[in-house]
Length: 97
Image 1 (tube, rainbow, N blue to C red):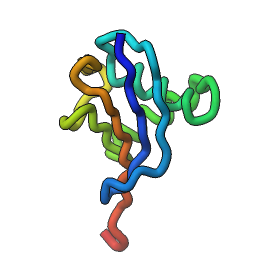
Image 2: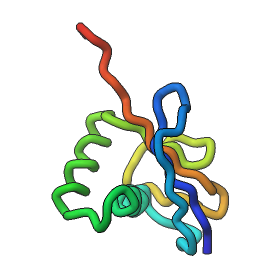
Image 3: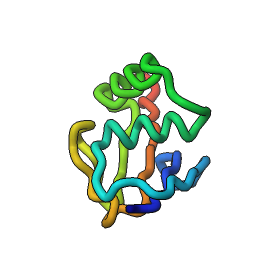
């Protein structure tokens, strides 16, 4: 079992908010971690919220960093025994382009 810190960060690495998720399995998909992040931020996420977050990930609206590595696919299995922190970084589009 793994204890994982999940946090929202700015693009400069400043932590906005974080949650400790204790007792997680040693491996989970990125999609499952995203669902847990949504749950941690305000109670159980509705299916529509998860669908919207997955669509935003696909549009590069945010990135997920597990340990020291960027997650490219929500179906990717993350080894939580090696990634004790998962960061969600919202990307802001450039003005005018």
